[in-house]
Image 1 (cartoon, one colour):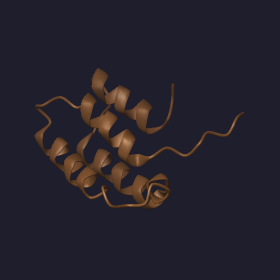
Image 2 (cartoon, one colour):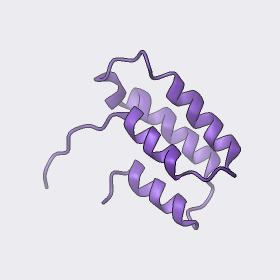
Image 3 (tube, helix red, strand yellow):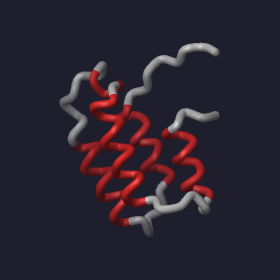
Image 4 (cartoon, one colour):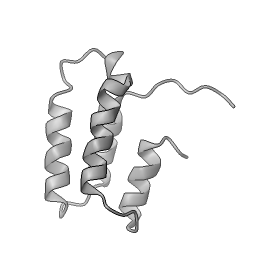
Length: 82
């Protein structure tokens, strides 16, 4: 099992926002607010739980199931599953 380089939450958040349909207004709003707050954070900090946990909270509050294709893709992306 190989070690992965920690991922930058800002990059993953952008990728997640690209997967969210426009009809998910509240989820997109919360993701944009989160993303907007990352611009002045140190890149090494954006790879820590300090930022990953809030992103996970946003997703868990807005995604109640993983039945839709876009939801499954987001879950895999967030969990770093290929």
